[in-house]
Image (cartoon, rainbow, N blue to C red; front, side, top):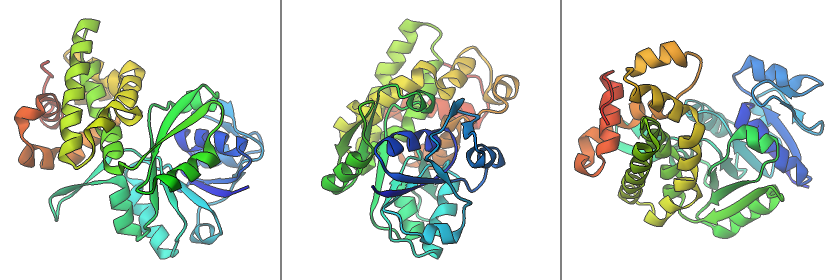
Length: 318
């Protein structure tokens, strides 16, 4: 039995505890921000309001604190949204945590001072000082995982053997793990697919969307290579696998559909998705300064088009 701490009580963090517990691990979950999820997780019923399922009784909930971070865990899992990465990085540093980290968060960070793009693991390593960081990505809808639908993900670490050790601790008959040494490629693919799923969602017919899907993969391959990842990673679970799931029915694709119907982003957000987080839009605003100044725009016309559409609040032209 291994002691695992999951930081982030949202849908994905909470769903992730289910295969971990099934593997006979001692799992604790904590939530730094959301009062709603703290209420869900600390109640006797353990009914998760976002997942619409009861979480296992063996799941422990503890209030977030520096003392909790200092407890002896074999693995700490980060399942916070992108804005929480700097927060938790500083907390890990303050608590002098040396425990291996597994990051579920998807996204990229623009560092204005050095004018470069950082992956989540790079940003977390920079802020926290933690060296052993793995990432877990792939086509995984939290609600489906919570219902134990078969799910495949990829764990990336520079040490493939360490990635496999994590896989051994969390894999089940329905939660399948693959492994990669290409951390950069896995992180870049899992982030930019949110932008491309918006683009694919903008297609108002299957013919148009399939064409956009194919062109999106070409651009994803270019960007993965540009950021020093491996092109073949684009064709794996973190690339086309995750892109398919997002384009088939995620929030990014939903927003893309409204953009394709002629709404500007601000109007669509206010009218149809006022309470939804659109990760693709967040990423657009994060990386736009770098993309528009540093990358050959002729290589990524779909991304450039969407960035300008959102930044300038224009109607999208496909």
